[in-house]
Image 1 (tube, rainbow, N blue to C red):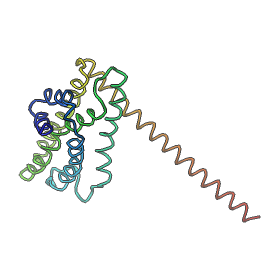
Image 2 (tube, rainbow, N blue to C red; image 1 turned 30 degrees about the vertical axis):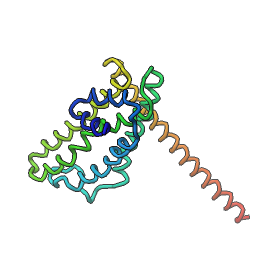
Image 3 (spheres, rainbow, N blue to C red; image 1 turned 90 degrees about the vertical axis):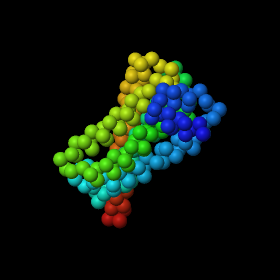
Image 4 (spheres, one colour; image 1 turned 60 degrees about the vertical axis):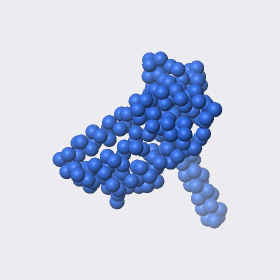
Length: 208
């Protein structure tokens, strides 16, 4: 049950947990990471429906399920790809499968504590919404710290090099999606141009 020990260890002893992922490569399995990544979505949807109305930032009737899925999984997957690319050129030591696993394990605080925090809102009033926002912020700060720690431990970086690598990852993700959005815009404009051109040709043919 190596994976279960690692999941629990991420909460109590994250440095040891990430080290075990790195050094116990013979016990590697994709399933724990896949399961954890899958759990993010039902946890997010559950929190939307459970969180009390006065303190909720998003009502169930306003929720766009595909958009919520996109908002969570696209940044996570982008981080994995860019992180592998950046660490590959900065003498990193971990493989793609280890980056996927460490990323999934870094999200354990969100998976574990989001629903309990949402249930906690049942006893809160609108004047106590700040407490809910604070708890959510603590969870995300925890996740962010785990992301930094997993980059440092998995690649045997110093703290300074880790922070620089994380910065490069963030910039890389931003550039990646800027390029993707630019390409999508160009494709959209080109498709519109072709459609208009086809319409003009069709008009000229039938007019004559």
